[in-house]
Image (cartoon, rainbow, N blue to C red; front, side, top):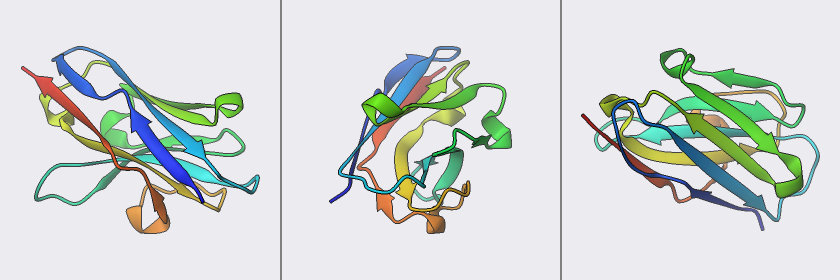
Length: 123
């Protein structure tokens, strides 16, 4: 059974940085994609960044110059480095996994989800 566990969220001031981690356990198969999403109450979940088993990445335009996604295969961990944080980045951040290598930032494309980690940016 596959489990995804996020960590690294917290409270920071505007301009600060955080690194989120998503540890994937129990996964099988060499082809996959892992993505980060975020959601605030009352709004739809939005895709932030994704990485596939080949190391290709995609990042949403609204965070492209500030967020970076990477992975450490030896640790089964996907990271989201967030720099120059803004109050509008405040959200619950989730990681998700799909058994397809193609990158996607659509939540409907992913079937496995973690519980989320809260990020709060104060002005």
